[in-house]
Length: 521
Ligand code: FES
Image 1 (cartoon, protein in one colour):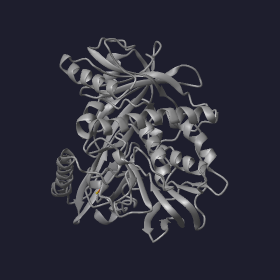
Image 2 (cartoon, rainbow, N blue to C red):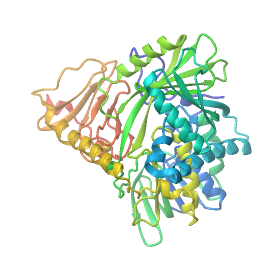
Image 3 (cartoon, rainbow, N blue to C red):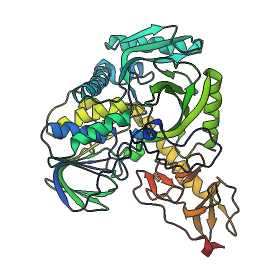
Image 4 (cartoon, rainbow, N blue to C red):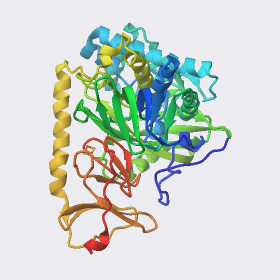
């Protein structure tokens, strides 16, 4: 296979591994066309990750003409940087769901997640997709005696809901644990091999995928919507926003979820990797699983070091911490890849899937997958392909973005917004005023005030200096330097910009303004 390694992150530093995910490193780059002229379709889908691609496919299979609009390249952003666990086991969640949503709500979650797992399996089989799809067990384990109570409560809740759960005291891991919950017959796969095959089925017969076409605005009219992009207008009867964090936010999503980042190392072990997918139940969070390589052997993924976006301190340390932790636990021979990803966590841990706002007839949204994007995105596709076509769906009320009845959600909502307000005000006040452009070390980035303007300046390895406005184009918070990924990250709602100010990740959809340092000397 022709493989092209692609990374947004410039290398040249001393962190372990190449700065690219296993998935991107081992699949060809896509080259779907840009939108060239205005177009009319039944459904426009904004975002070409697993949620957008799967929704588009299910709608096309039911006779709709669809257009997927992707700002960059499909299956390359969050989906290209996942650890791709296909499981209904989402940490310890079922005991929480029973207490927050009752048995009925928890049952809808369990059933929909298991159905998503089987939907992926059936798509793989029906389309004969060669994507390393392998059935395996999933574990949440603890090494702490105190944590066993939570594990056993989860086993009890999951078993009552009919999930394939059991309590175990040993796992295939090469170290002892206190106890674990095991879900049997779950799955792992190569997400890009899977999605590139699905994408090929979308293109044609009046349906299209457009890459490098950024959606800028949506106008909802009586019976149709106009999606304005930087390449032209797409008119559609319905629009699905599957752009990770919704860029078009009439549902106040920015106030009811928070973005978090996490890090992954792709290692070669000296022996065979343990079979299964594993996460810790207790802090600090870690996860691991393997995937085969076409060239032989396998990559053992070790993930962890979560933090809220833009609030991770020196982000380079997260990779070095992860490397230390991985080498303490496993016989790591080499580290081949490193990558990071971003997830949106909702206030009650259930994604927002459905009508984008209560007054909206034509706009739908899928977001807030909380790190469990493989099945949650497929649940989104199943629900939205019903709702968009005016059909009922038995799971839709649990995931309804316009819920917000449980009191705990309201409390958590306030906490989220206090955090954002703290950054909105506090970060502005803490920016230091400088008389002249500061002298930075290679790899360093800093926000300073020069001539009454907040400027984000970084110096890459090799010496190139870039300066951009430090004011996030979403809602005006001050961005923070992410030294590991060479990006400017917003602590308020998780927008990310490359070192040169171009948008990597929304909700922002405009680049940071470039600043000339010659005018500031
Ligand atoms: Fe909302 Fe930056 S992402 S202000």
